[in-house]
Amino acid sequence: MSVSFHSEQIKYTISNASSISEWLKEVCTKEGKSLLEVSYIFCSDAYLLEMNRQFLDHDYLTDVITFDYCDGNDVSGDVFISVDRVSENAISVRASTIDEMHRVIVHGLLHLIGYNDKSKAEKTLMTEKEDYYLSLRTF
Image (cartoon, rainbow, N blue to C red):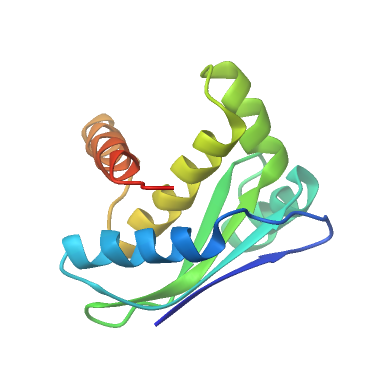
């Protein structure tokens, strides 16, 4: 069971990495899943835009893209997060950058667990889950 944090083409270091890892393991456990291996890769808007174009055929900015390698109840995948987008989103929703980063981190994990956010109902459930798990942070 491991959570790892990396950066691609930018310098970014997540604070409280071990606490975040434990929190994410708790999220999986509460969802009836086992966290096998999840890598978070922090990058720029430009980097994630290129990934969005290349792998998803989408030509727009996004804050997170997940690559799901899950098998049964074992949660595994790569979560790419645009630090630029998270910073801008934090301003627009009047949240601290770190709180918004934690929201996007758990959002990516929820995608790997199996939640989607395409429809209004799915978005509502995803936001409820994010809010709940954010309330469990102890760091």
